[in-house]
Picture (cartoon, rainbow, N blue to C red):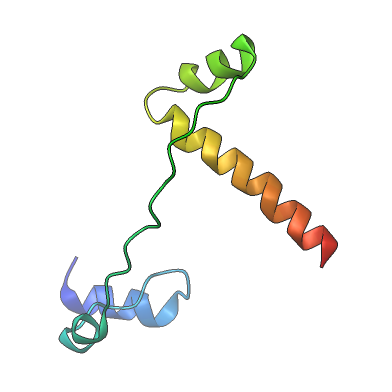
Length: 78
């Protein structure tokens, strides 16, 4: 695939990310992820097994599930 092919795909398909140019890189800013707070809480063994069975990163997936519940509740409340 040539550079021209890539530029054409970017122009023609809105799902293709824009070309990363020097100008884009100059304006880019790094935003660190919020620091997580370590906690300890009890969950049912089958819940923990479910998340662990998906492989490493189970705590992040549990956090994402809790965030989805929080976001849905906030959206429902308006």
